[in-house]
Amino acid sequence: MDALAAPAAGSEVRRAQATASGHVHALALVLAALGADGCYQPRPLDARAVMNEVSRGSGAGGPASVAARPAMTPPEGLTEDAAVALAMRGNPDLRAVRLSRGIAEGEVVAAGALANPTIGFDLIHIEDWANTEAWAVQLGWQPPQPEAYAARRAAARAGAQAVDADVAEAEWQVATSVRAAHAVMLALADKRALVDRQLDVRHKIVELVRKRVAGGASTRLDLGVVELALTQVERERDELASEQIAAGTDLGQLLGTTPVTSVAGVLAAETRPPPALDGLVDAALEARPALAAEERRYRQREENVRLERAQRFPWFKLTAIPRYRADGSDVHPHDFSAGLELTVPILNLNGGPIQIAEASRDQEREQFAKLAGGIRRDLAGAREEIALRAETLRRYQEAVLPGLDAQEKLLATAVAGGQLDVVALTAAEEGILRTRSTYIDLELACYRAWLALDRAVGRRQSISAPR
Image 1 (cartoon, one colour):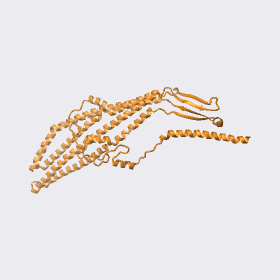
Image 2 (tube, rainbow, N blue to C red):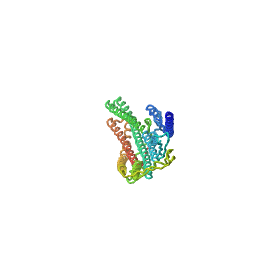
Image 3 (tube, one colour):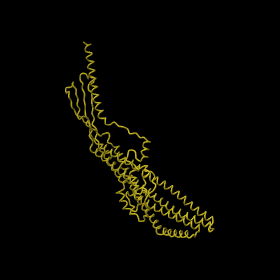
Image 4 (cartoon, rainbow, N blue to C red):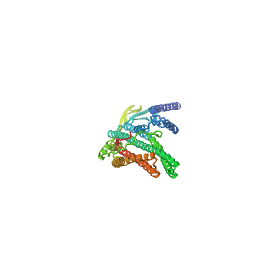
């Protein structure tokens, strides 16, 4: 009889094991189905492929760029506004900064997400599974604490707004840098035109002196002097050509394109006084994106303080909503129950995180104060620079430039009449060239001072921008 009972007992054990295995497999299938959407396909980075994309004029992972287009510079030259528009599309730093918006938006979504419920599955009385086959399943969930949930979402939104302001600040800084680089190319083009005109005059003087030497009216020493003067201007022309190449490369880097070869516009000789400092400060407080970014980051730190303070209060977790237990050996074979777990803040009042959050908030306030003070200093310095440059420009326009015009007419008359004092003539031509070149530098310095004011305010103040 015992021999007959043994196989039966073994069969019951195997049946119990099979039943338990079936439950486990079913639970595994449910978990696999829930996680099926989470399969991630990695996106590899191929350096050669990215370089080829850039050389074809499209940025990796973004909209089409103007990079490497051989005909991107219009035949009439690139205007300042067109250059700024190109930079807003193709500047590589801006393209990278704008992607931070996706991170901030993801943080807003994460802050508003609710905790996932938990499912627990238990096999009960495994030691006597063949007779009982008892099991239990329970659903749990921790609801969000209202104050902490609101603070977390508000902090994420403030962070996203700060990122938007950071992007606007980066765009403004790039636009101002593009305007400055464009102005440098305009100034170099003006100097190049000035040197080219001077070269024409010097060639004429050299030819005239050669004729005079052949006729005995001048010496070979005179010819050597004017030829040396011509060589010096040619060397200056070559230096300017090199500077133009470098300036075009710098501007192209800002635009995200190949080097710019020519620009269009005129450097404005702005001599009006700068606006009042108080009005500029008010405009900067309203328009400067960097200030808005710091203010929103401070708001984010405030919400973090609120969050950490809220987390020191008691809160609960629903550990069983409900719990179902099936046990045929129990007096209640179908057992339903509910459970709740409460955190009691006795040993830990969240003091450390609160202290960290408050210190971070105070640190952010000091950063805002530093930025605000720096902007005010930049505004005051730009105003002083504008006033100085404007006064120098007025002096040149009223006294120096009219004298240069008169002197050039006298020199042209002397050359046309063959009345040459070689030393005096070359010295006068050199003085005119240097003075006009200095005036171009003054125009550029004045416009740069206005751009520095624009940069500090956050909006354009220079009304006589290159057109």
